[in-house]
Amino acid sequence: MYTNKEKARPRPAKAASGSGLVQTHSHLKYPHQLNFYDQPPVEDITLEEFETCALSRLRVLGEIESSFARNRSWDELVQITNKQCENHGLKLNASTAISQDLDGERRRDHVGHFVLRLAFCRSEELRRRFVKAEMTLFRVRYESMTDIDEKNQFLQSLELGWEAVTEKELAEYHEHLVAAATSKEVLELTKQKKERYYKVRWTRVPDLIEKRRVFLNAGMAWVPHREIASIIYQEFQTRLDKALQMTAKALPRLDEDTRIIPILDNLSQGFLAGVSSEWGNASSSGNGSEVTADMVDDIARKHYPACMRNLHDCLRRDRHLKHFGRLQYGLFLKACVLGLSIEEALLFWRKSFSNMQDDKFNKEYRYNIRHSYGLEGKRANYAAKSCQQILLSDQPGSSDNHGCPYRHFAPENLQSALLSMYSSQGLTSGDLPEIMHTVKNGHYHVACTRVFEITHSKQVSKGEGIGGGESVTHPNQYVTKSREMEARMQVKDEDVVMG
Ligand code: SF4
Image 1 (tube, helix red, strand yellow):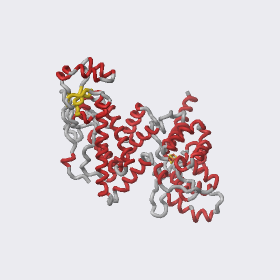
Image 2 (cartoon, rainbow, N blue to C red):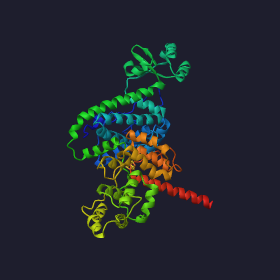
Image 3 (spheres, rainbow, N blue to C red):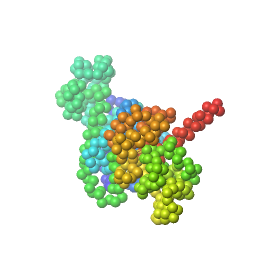
Image 4 (tube, rainbow, N blue to C red):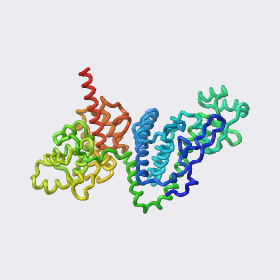
């Protein structure tokens, strides 16, 4: 995929103009904390790395999209994005952080970005959303950079053709600069001769010229330092836009690669569904857990997301579930925190199908349940379905109960189902307009996350999601977080009683 090692090596750092203090980091393969992703990674990449780097990045971008859908303030978005970067190994440290594996973390960031380019270049819609999310991630990182010298060094490396305005020129055109300054801050600094200016070809800043926010001289716009950031973001967006279109043209050459295409399909589908990721802990065999068949009703009532609550309630009502419903619910029960062992699972399903004779159950259902635990057939350990899979695959018909209620229920049915499932946990009809607005815009997992916040309002506030600002991406993650929060509350209550 990448062959020309010399050509693609990131450019070495250059000292920023006007600063004698800039330290170069020439020992690093990636000399800058930030990256404009002008060159693809060139070394061999394992398939596993290809996928994991992309998934980590997708989680961060997915959370950025959720933040837009939830109208989070910029400060909240910055805080959540930085936290997500930390959680998913995408935090980029300053070059002065000598104890960190700087090249390692920058390489992961670099690889993840380029894999997602391959996944998201394939349609106008994907490109638009990807550029917006990537630009936001870049902006968050740029704003969070505290080392000014390193920032200058990075800007210099971009070779944008800027030139710092000299002291002499500043003095000569002082009056013009004061007249052109639009913001109060720039005006004050310019009056005090403390603002730095850069000369940029006027064609690069049409928006600033249109708004008359810069001084023009001999075809060059004199841009105050405080306006520089918006030009960088614009440049990042323009370059990424162009690069994605070029990648889209080149992509058909990859179409016959049976290893890579399914990974790319999976990544882009997840983004389209508005759900960023798989949840890492959902493929456990479930053995060794203390959950028994008798406990399931109680856990369902207190901790289930709407998809599983619906399946559970239908199972209790009809004493039966159709194939895809059994599959979705059975794998959910098997995985992770619920961790129903195979014996308990057989007991649970046997009791649930109470209208059925033993003989029929043993012949028609026992095998399938054992199969889903990897004890029959090809003995695969099937993972529980993620939101992405539930939202996109095996679309339910009118007599099916599987799927995601936020996506697959009619609006009136969804509202009455939510009230009947969650009013005992604090959800009221006053909460529905906000939830339905999110559903209408296709952000199903955001609606699910909001319901989690409302039903766990003692533990999380609005905007905190299932903790730390994270959104729901997997039913098992929902139930795990819910149970963890309950356990923490119980410990607190006991402490109060003891204290
Ligand atoms: Fe289930 Fe995910 Fe839909 Fe929530 S968003 S109801 S967890 S499929």
